[in-house]
Image 1: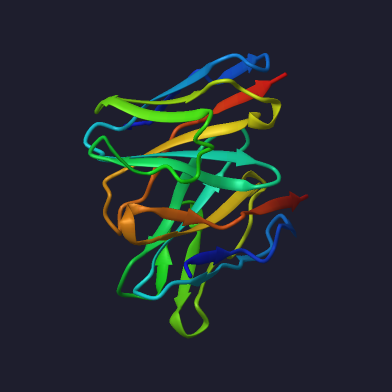
Image 2 (image 1 turned 180 degrees about the vertical axis):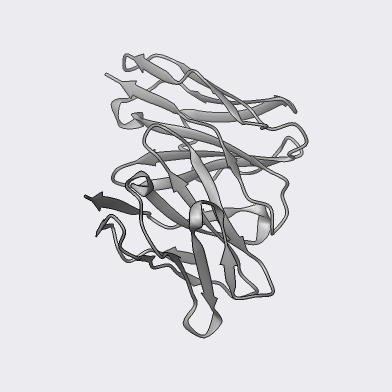
Length: 114
Length: 112
């Protein structure tokens, strides 16, 4: 079974440090999404890509968050500097970019910023 | 406006009882709808999807959902709940621009 792989699974860091989360989408999927999940806000779409090009990153705080796809097998989400309010679970999902194609989610990165 | 509403934040049912989780959507065109389930510590997993044809769709783990255009609803059902069904359930809508939006989720508790 093909899977979306996210690393690390857990990250604890101090406020002000840089955090990088990585995602390997399923081979052949041309859309990649970053979601953030918190108890208060639920699932928030941060950014997404199609064919490695960013389509929408309006959900991200631009001053500290950045998302990239250096190649088709890697998507990254960076936070610099991190803040306690960034503590959340960050999910990567990939899909075929078609209406009837579901998203496939990774198991997430649980980020704790102290 | 495009939106997905799950009115119930949490639901508790007894094992063996039937289940219905509600989902309402707002979308100006033909909706493409999904139900996902999330177990603790894991990502979301697809249960079923609707994009055309029969309004009753079958999914994995014995779940089904009924699409009702007149009510803008896509409710998830299961005839007999098992303790392993305890999880969080998300209704989702594929919108233009390749984007999928999710409801706030409904957490299901199953009591013995």
